[in-house]
Image (cartoon, rainbow, N blue to C red; front, side):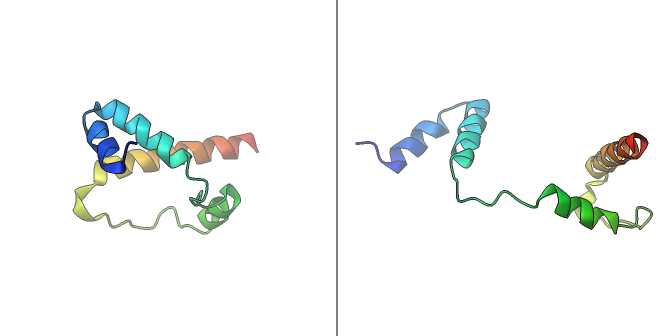
Length: 83
């Protein structure tokens, strides 16, 4: 019988892509894991946000956050146009 330590050693030998696939498989197989907030809950919370509010980003992650905000802004604009 294979034990967890043996499986971990084998997994450590996999490529990063294969380990990511294994991690995704294992996470998807955990049925008791919380799925996160419902879409309606997120949209409701987003409605109260001030889009012009200043944002403090520690650790200098400005570039990745700027891309995230740009994508969110484009999605919001597209949603508004469809209404």
